[in-house]
Image 1 (cartoon, helix red, strand yellow):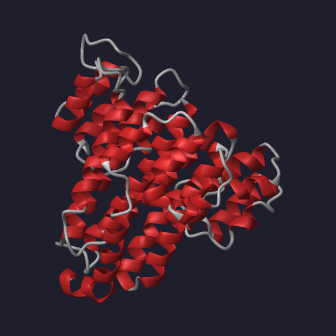
Image 2: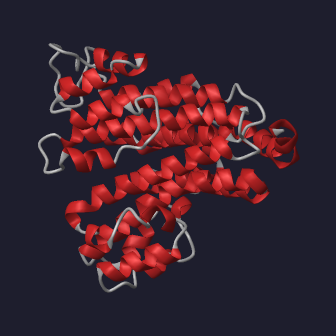
Length: 346
């Protein structure tokens, strides 16, 4: 079914994205990028992929200006794809914006608590996480009003309802709020690709289910590691784990009971990839490392997760008739931006 359905508008969208992929950096570009010493050097290496979006930048622009233009290109191309999509494909693409919406709302909540300037907050919001009623959130005079606005006026309302109350929206709980929203979002997105008649039993379900399971597991592992030494209780921690993934349910239960890194290592040991990550960065029993680790080659646990995500994104491009290539393309574009900024800051 998906082959026929996706060829109506999805095949066209897939063709556009594969064309976009041709503008991604080559291995040589990446190698050259790591040798850059100035913003102009980085700009030169990005030229083939970003063209006119960087051409109008002044010589030796600021890092933020360069990053802004890179984001502008991603946003422009994604919005063009969204404008071409219909039906289930349009809904799929809309799901890709919800993570940005969550980050924007968390930013506005934090800014409201600290009485930051409304215009400054809105300027810092990611364009892909923008929705028509977003500025309304800044009008709230207190957190309860903000909560009511979010609950009623945003696409994320279902992720708040039944999970969060206005009492949760304070500075101490902002990361709990963010992780709760992401948990609900990932579960909803996973359910969508697994049950939607146009995607069920197709490459879209296969590719995206694997990607979303990986993201659910990564979040559960990171939440656990970051909770050590904090006031977050084991019961509260468990509520933040997405209820699907390769670790769910047994591994998730073990994570919720973990008291230290060794407990986390034991919880993930049944999944070969994750065990390999912990082995590589020295987080296995007796391996030392502590925290997020650091292997002999200097890679951290987050580096290992990041590398795996990029590999999965590249594999997605080997499949046909699936909007999963849009997700993969966005992750790869963000990799270019992240690496460019990392080079300039280090």
